[in-house]
Image 1 (spheres, one colour):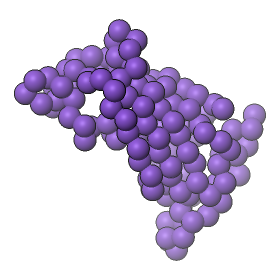
Image 2: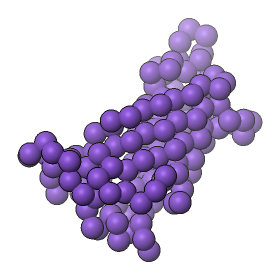
Image 3: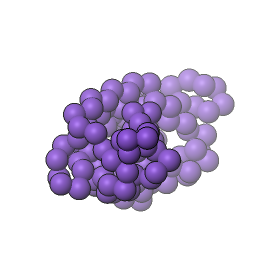
Image 4: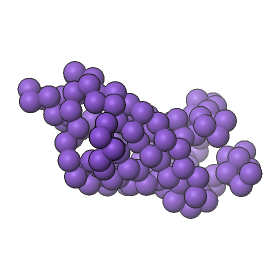
Length: 132
């Protein structure tokens, strides 16, 4: 499926006293990667929301293989699992500066009507971009 790679530099505030990234920061890295993935396709998260569609995360799985450290440049590979219907699923691989796999992750988000707070189908504009 469609993949995109982005980089994130670990900031000091994301680490503990040993310079290791705190586990609670990884969901933010995944969000950065997802937004960049959408942007690479010409899809604006802000535009999706302005159309009354929200994308809450309903599943988040993270497997920590090795630690990430302060000031490392992490590479995040984001892969679409399948063509979305009511939900959209991603798999991620995070690599450190030595190109070692340090983390794998999976997220599932659901397209939700912001007003009704009910699931809806993936917007056609997004499907069109994914199928081109």
